[in-house]
Length: 310
Ligand code: FAQ
Figure 1 (cartoon, rainbow, N blue to C red):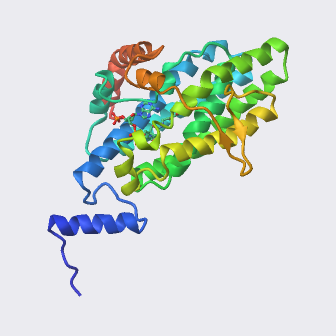
Figure 2 (cartoon, protein in one colour; figure 1 turned 120 degrees about the vertical axis):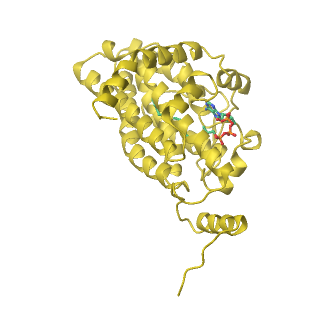
Figure 3 (cartoon, rainbow, N blue to C red; figure 1 turned 90 degrees about the vertical axis):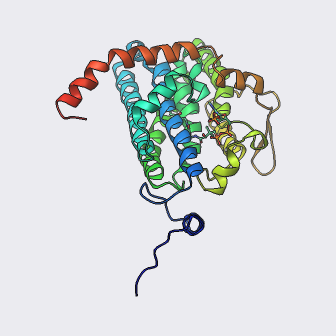
């Protein structure tokens, strides 16, 4: 029997929606609505930028790691984050935009990256807090994104999640070790938790009712869980981890309920939007650093192209 060729926009849209509803992946050469394409371009490229800019707070500590073992682990971890950025830029490029364009949008402030990376890493304990909390928050979100409807994004997430769970554990190990150390080390670990707790909760984005991108993201199964659901999942699993090693979550309103979930204070949304809109403690520094090294790396890209590597 001859296969009917779908031509009208209505038929194409119907076929697209049927695929989404039956959990089939949308692939780069499949027809997709422009809004779906643009939504993915925005989210995946911003996700890639977050991975790459996220290397900066930790990169700052490679030369000051307290032992060869911790230096090797930190180096490997940061290198992984760079790799995650590359998988994600490649996934985003399948939607028809070049990597150069993504980088230009980042440098011009048109593209965002996770607000959490605009906070400074002040002590070695921050390497623990970033791995445990920032990677812990990232993985909570990324586990659900493994089921995202766009094939290349979903496959990138599967690999990233495997690496991210190692990152979360290395961070927790640093915190655990410090909590077994001297009083000064314990205070340093608590101070790092105090400073990174709230920025980590902000990673999940605004409350569901204030999240303009969520409706389409959920309809098209780009996001599989809402910002608030994911944030609560992270809070509920992280508090017992803190308690186990003697750390105190910096929230005076925390209250364990019978179902194992917690009542907690709300985020300082004024601070969140300030940092998202470019006015956090390190926004300028992070972008300047990226622009400087991107420009200085021009000769490497040129050499790679000339030698046929790119
Ligand atoms: N920071 O309507 P929604 C990592 C923006 S990777 C900055 O809720 P959506 C690895 C949002 O873009 C971590 N901007 O938006 C690592 C939107 O603005 P736009 C990165 C934020 O997309 C670990 C506006 O606010 N992970 O950590 C933030 O539905 C350690 C309204 O928001 C991902 O990117 C924020 N926190 O939900 C590396 C995951 N929240 O674009 C080194 C993929 C919101 O309209 C060390 N992304 N905004 O101008 C997502 O899941 C989603 O995009 C959300 C935001 C949840 C981030």
